[in-house]
Image: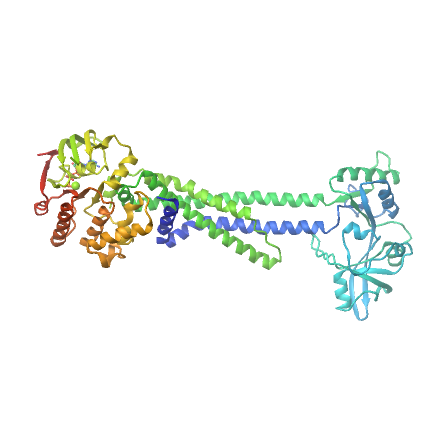
Length: 407
Length: 221
Ligand SMILES: Nc1ncnc2c1ncn2[C@@H]1O[C@H](COP(=O)(O)OP(=O)(O)OP(=O)(O)O)[C@@H](O)[C@H]1O
Ligand SMILES: [Mg+2]
């Protein structure tokens, strides 16, 4: 008998007992569906997170004032605001691993354009902010070096702010009031979407840091909230961190026994965390999948044993008319594999549709990887072979005379 | 000689006792014979027929089928002999339930040399039509009378064109009219050259055979 005919006959035997076959395959169906759905959603989520991290900037390294040991980045260290724009310039000049640098000062502010008002955050930065964050203007232009030097009252705005204040009007070259002071809008940034922690990155106003400090914060000090650096590559991160630390320690005149009065933060920790979470999830899934496949497999074994004893006379007859023991073995093995394989296929279909529904609700992308589908199919067929073998072997070992005599 | 048996013995071993089912049976059956095996219940008729059908092996003695010493063959070779040289007809028909008459007849063809499904259908249909079941090709066994079921079973036994038909009480479950029909069919097949060995209790049925072998206590008398 050829494989195709064997499989066809097996399928027919299963269809003859539709309800029983479906119930038996349910373990496999649910297990495979769960794995496919969770993998698809999980991969979609992890890709989204990775994208959001990348949207933070190009090879980003952020320096906060205050030591980590002093309790958090800002708290506790708030009194000793030690980081200045000059620190940043020194780093840029002395460390060749740093490609671009911008200081950043923050201020929350109420903004008004005509009768529209909107509360948002104002980021004071340098021109190279564009390069550090990999963020371009969509219309108009960014402010220039001379704007920064002269602390002009100009700004570019994020897409959300443009929508809230201008509501369809072209914001370029219009004047808005930030904390009641007039700023000219030079451009609108492209959309960056939400950050990894869900914050809307487009809900912001970007202005020269000199202007923010002098006009909005009314500060006489040189301090900045952070320095954002773009490294030439992420591979040299440890070396860059070391060199930057040395430069800052020297500039801040820290002796060997003193801790850093600044903190270097990069995105590798976040990336690592995501990888860790996703590998943990994969492990968990593997365990769940294995359990459900084993449970499903035992169900198949059980029902195949029942089928063998129900069809003892059929087996005896087949042996009498010329079936070899191998043919009987293959027949029942094919039934088990068809059962688990069909279960796997249904499970995959169910898993993909479940993932799509979850994705539709949560606005995540779904990533159904062909690899996962292939593995699922292989495993379900494997379960059929493994758990179907014993019943099939019992069938093949039956004595034809006794089998034919069975009622 | 189609069948030559020499000193065939078979003992069933129960927990405590040994049951000698066949004790030194020797006989010849030529091609083209129609033999009825008779004897009391437990005299070893079925045991002998199962040995002839290569479903079982003797404990001692030799069995030549068509010149071939079958008790030396492996189980795959025996399966091939059952498939090509022997057609079985049983008292309880042994048709697959919920399977059409046509598919039941096709069954032995799956275990023989590869043929196309068209040829498979063709051979089964031709046989069923010949046995008067033209309108019953798609019927399941449950939808057929006993006589019709036995005719389907005979078609199945014939589909591989074997030289030998073995029948264990083929009329045991039939009324006398159907039984006579089946016997007429056997005689017709026998006239065409097929050797038939049939076990029966009933002298009325044994009448149809050309020769009767009487058995008693595992021996031919
Ligand atoms: N599987 C078996 N195990 C033990 N003893 C058996 C077995 N099969 C048959 N026997 C015994 O062997 C003897 C011959 O049995 P067999 O079935 O050949 O008789 P039979 O002539 O066909 O009888 P019947 O006319 O009732 O069908 C009987 O005594 C029976 O009890
Ligand atoms: Mg008997």
